[in-house]
Length: 229
Image 1 (cartoon, helix red, strand yellow):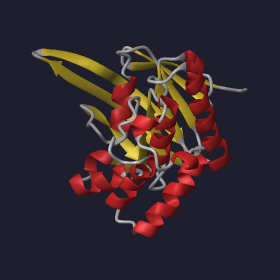
Image 2 (cartoon, rainbow, N blue to C red):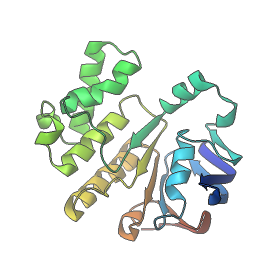
Image 3 (cartoon, rainbow, N blue to C red):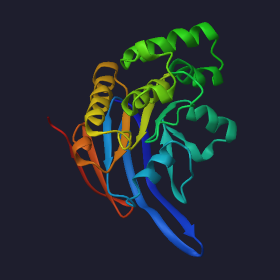
C-alpha cells in the first residue's frame, strides 16, 4: 500500500518565556493508505503536537513531514493551503458555525474549494446520510446533541474527499455512549469506505478500536502494536 504520511526524525521545541520545552524528540512514523492509527498518550506526551505537524498547522524545529511523498517544508503558503484541503480535520470541540445548519456547515469547505451550489447540496446530503443525520440536516448546532454535532463535524471533514482524517480527541466532549457510537462510525468509514484515519487520544479503550496503536510519552514513541481483533 502507498504511504500517505511519513514523519522523519521530528523535533519540536516551544519557548515558554526563555525556557525551551521539547514537545517532540525525534519521532519517526509511517501511515499507510487505509490504516486506522491511534496515537495514544497522556496530556503533554506530544501527540497533539504531532497531529498539528502532520496537518501542516505548524512546522517542525527539525525533521520533516511527507504527505503523499511531498515534503511539506518545501511548500509555499498557497501550496500549503492546497495541501490542507487533502486533510479532513475533526476536533474535540466540533468547531461548527452556530448560525449555520448542519447541511450548511458541511457545505462550507466545498464552497471554499469552489464547488457549485447544486453539487455542494447533493454531497452534503449524501455525507449527512452516511453519518446517520440526514433527518437533522436543517438543524443548527444548538439543536443537536454533542454526539450529533461530532457526526456533522466528521461529515464536514469528508466534504472535499480528503486523503486522510486527522482526529484530535474526537470523543473528548461527549459522553461514553456517544463516544463509542462515534468510534463505530469511524471504524465503519475505515473498513467500508477505506478512509485513512489518524486519531490521537488519551483513552486506551478508544485506542483499542484502531488497527494500529502507537504510544507516546515525553515526546517520543515508546511502544507500537497491531490490533489483531
